[in-house]
Length: 112
Length: 116
Image 1 (cartoon, helix red, strand yellow):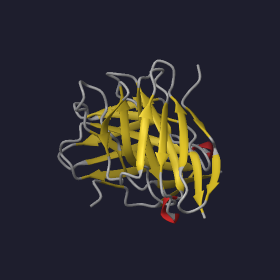
Image 2: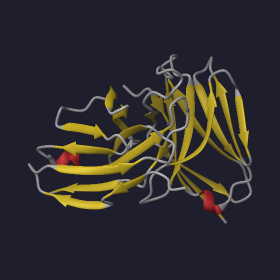
Image 3: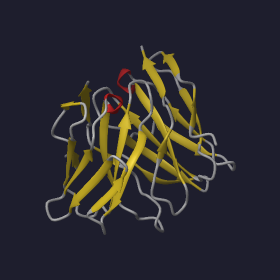
């Protein structure tokens, strides 16, 4: 049973560019959330998708957008990258009615 | 304003002894609490959780205690093993969506070192 999978694992982008990160949830999970973890900090909630719609959103600007597909996989898009967007981006999934959220290994984004 | 606080950035414990990691929260609406363990270059791994209707939950060497009046929870690891060395995150949430989890609010983590 595959857990939460994310791609790519590492990437380097230039300031001002756009990036797309991808996530496949754990089998049987239909809710996907994205978190940003800066060095020395705990993960911070970006948004959550359920039934292909954004259900909750954290305190992140509109440059951060997402999408959920019919197979429950999800993408995180960040436009107009800033140096401060350099972080580990974590995808997490959970089943409807479930209380436990499982995380993927993350995508390391470096903006130069 | 941090809603979930882990005030000890690091903790060092001898192998075989008890590790106690602490977490405080400010939002009384939180009704579900989780602990995650994180190794470098990996995503957080779920460890144990507790609902606000309980005050204790145990799973093998790991026990989580919840004191709602004090808005405090703690994770006890007994006995501690060198493989437990990692960063431990406390997280809290509100179950707003038909019983499903809302977003998690994390503390900054405590780095546990278990020395042989």
